[in-house]
Amino acid sequence: MITLPHPFIKNLLTAPLDFTHLLDEIPMGVLILDTHRRVVFLNRAFEALSGFSPSMAYGIQCYNILRGAACISNCPVLSIKDDNRAVFCETDMINLNRQRIPIRMTTAPILDDNFNITGFIETIGNIRLSQKIDREKSVAYSFANIIGRSPQMEKIFQTLPILAQSDVSILITGETGTGKDLVAEAIHQTSGRESGPFIKINCGALPETLLESEIFGHQKGAFTGAVENKPGRFKLAHNGTIFLTEIGDLPLSLQVKLLTFLDDKIIYPLGSTKGFKANVRIIAATHRNMEQMVALGRFRKDLLFRLNVARIHLPPLREREGDIRLLIDHFFNSYKQQLDKKINGFSKETLMVLLNYKYEGNIRELKNIVEYAINVSTNPTIELHHLPSYLLESSHSIESGQSEIEKQTLKNDNTATAADSLFNPKNNLTTPETWSSIQREIIIEALKIRQQKFWGGEEALYGEK
Image 1 (cartoon, rainbow, N blue to C red):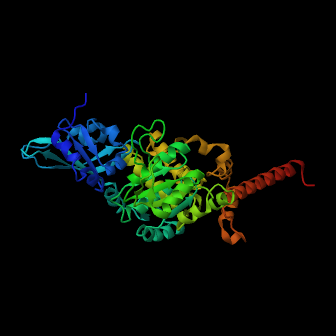
Image 2 (cartoon, rainbow, N blue to C red):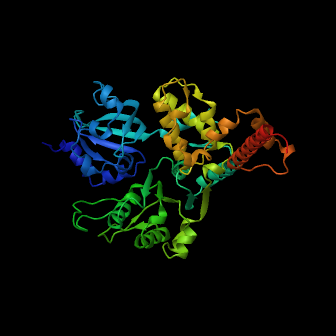
Image 3 (tube, one colour):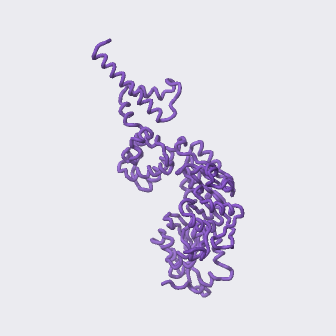
């Protein structure tokens, strides 16, 4: 059974000065609890951080909303002493999407006119950025949470700080798994909006009817099932950044509404004639060819112009010279520490496979491969059989490292000599450009040598002609 909050808190939240609106403008999460540690109110910043709406959280114990380590080991509310001083702690919380977020929390009692405790107020700040900066001080070739040293990435690293300090709309393009989400978050974290919310919307994850309500919000009674007001992601991102991933999947009807917002910066929730002026920055991302979609009539040209004020193209991993080894080492060290595994590294053969495989899933695929290998390995060294099986299948053998034929032919001294000549630029007018072409030449040379030996043996058997 849920009881009403203490009259003092109730009067505070319904004060003529619109106290709740004031709390919504604070750029960090705010929770107000009753004396039983049940949620009475949460502001817009906490809703953006946690994913819980006020109606979902009302009357629920705070530890079921925060779900942090401090809730289990050392509850800040219970740590408040008789002097009623505020309690500070750094802990974490688990949001509705089951993401762990490091936070700095301050908890203080709410006192009535007679100095009796009538509830508690908690402020929650996201400290993920500061923790990342501390971790990355020792990481070379990086910007925010992005790692790379190829010429393409160095050029992007030079561009990002400049774009971060402006409020122009940005379109990030690139194949799936190239790190578009990380770039968008890095721009937000290094901008003047870093203290505001970073709200991500996947334009291809929901049907059109639900997507419009999710983005722009709705009023109670706007449609069947709308039993309460919903603020929408744009309103939650006020004073922060909206990240529209997979913008190419946005339905045409919502493209018109997004275009209208980009013109006047006002959103109109479904069923409402009253607009809300949202101060948000737009970052969009897609793996699609937007110019081709415009030509096919599947994306509005005028909307593309609005979003494409600045464009960042992320190259596929296979084109980033030197970055594969850098990322392998980064993910290896990260997962080795995270999983507490005593592994020294990769065997020479395993590393050859990883360095020469064509990652169609780009960085995401490489990350998953390294995580899998560290999880299944029980040896001090990660061997070939610790890699996902598809890397070693015949369809990938030529693409992903030394093939079985090459391993056998390299045992032959003559073949090794032939192979060495392929890598010696003095012996060739042109040098093979890819590992696949090098392997093909090695195999051909090996077959030629074997053929010569065969015919030479046959001539010796039958005598000279």
